[in-house]
Image 1: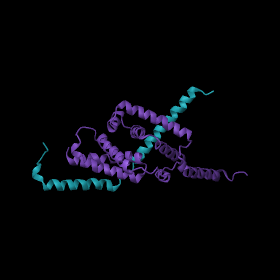
Image 2: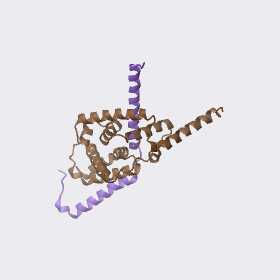
Image 3: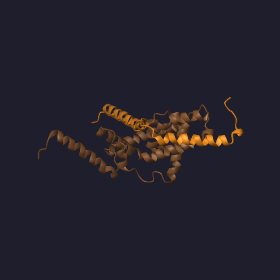
Image 4: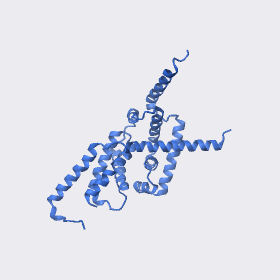
Length: 65
Length: 193
């Protein structure tokens, strides 16, 4: 009764749709604006790190080269 | 790597960390907590990052480990709240499309963890199998078969349970249907008795 070829086409289009929806779930979040507290978090961590390296600055000197 | 460079590269990954977290936890607030915790852990562990290697895979590994260790304690102990899931999708103005997305989310929650994460990373995040294998600490072939099994399972869940809603979510599904029907009624005038 069922046409196997039609079935395959339908299944493929369903899978394609599923794939698009999956991407959408992810991409929607990626395109959101980043909340401020995320960037603040890293800045604060960086500031803290700088302070602690300054206090024992002679332990590690210039490692740029 | 200079810490300033590390910081800017890590910052550039924030949208992806949030997206991975959101797909793992479903709850937007929990997801952002997880992503922030990941950022802090990544920052603290920056000395152990090897320059030239894949920073995204490295950070995703931290996020994944954090998720599972927290989950063992408390995270995601409660099932997905359908109202929360729906609220995050309300922004989508195409009602039927957002319903499909909600159904997909619910269906994904019924997958085993290993299949779910593989599908999120490969199917949703578009990451190469090799990177996902690195993140999940297993062979590339294992990831491929998990993704395949997840795809098949999703298709079955979505088909057998028409909209893929769990019984708890039936209310919100019905609400959406009611809304669609009442809109259709308005367009076509009163239905004949």
